[in-house]
Length: 298
Image (tube, helix red, strand yellow):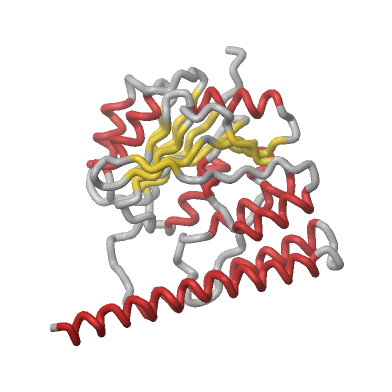
């Protein structure tokens, strides 16, 4: 088979009914040389395995990996990179879908552009009522790694985590883990991981709008048992996480380019953090004000 092998890694936990939808979109791909790995993070019972059995005849190279213990959502994601065999690799969330031409179109981009580390499709935001909202999807086509990294940090866009990556570059990417209180949180880790992809190659988006990644907005992306923190704890975690992310940004820039080049990145990071904190705090204040006004009106 002349097509390069592509691995799709699907991490899952406690959501067999959603996994069914993701695998249906994989089974509909018009690309033949596909390896599909489903990494089950120790879901109790056999429900996930039953979904896998249903698709074994529809997806030729489908492998079920059941972790012997729950290794945490982040490790379950990243471990798939080394368990894959494909020249190209992509993640697919167990509650999302891809268009039937997704893999074939992105492989074509990577094959024609050897300086591209990641190719991605167009992001579609699906609401609970089935309505699809097209969302802006960033690309980083600049020849200069410096220019790409600066734009990436300004936008802090992690949408292309679900693009198709060169596995040789992806294996060099790293995420050392969050500080307290986010050690076990998966949210936003991709920002740090993807900066390595940006530094090592261009990021291109398919010119064909029918090449789509369909993100189901109404499901949790935490891959946990459903436990939720208070709003205050969530806000503190979010602020600490964003500070942590930008610290890693500057650390990677300093090591990859040079310390002098890190100076403008420091300025950009500071501006971005101020912008994010303003929207976070202003949002909290506005919500509290609305509740207070509503109580007074009663």
